[in-house]
Image (cartoon, rainbow, N blue to C red):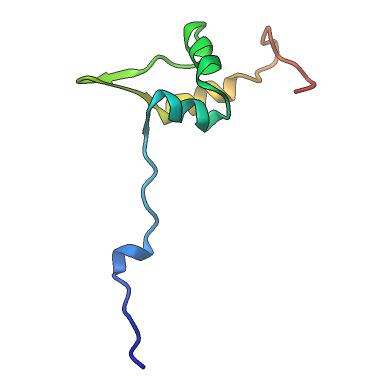
Length: 81
C-alpha cells in the first residue's frame, strides 16, 4: 500500500484575516449587525476603513474596542451580563 504525501503548506494553519466585513465584525464579537451599527455610531466600536469601494473593519481595532466595553465606570456596564 502506498502512502499519500501531504504538501508541506497544508500542515500550516491558514492565516487569520485582519479585515472583516460589517457582518463578520458583528459576528466576531457575538452580536447582530444592528447592535454593531449602534456601537459604531456611539463610538464604542471603531469606524470602518475604506479600501477603494470596500468597507472593512480592522480586527485588531475591534479587539481593542471590545476589551474596553467592560471597563469599570462604563455607563452601561451590567454586572449581570
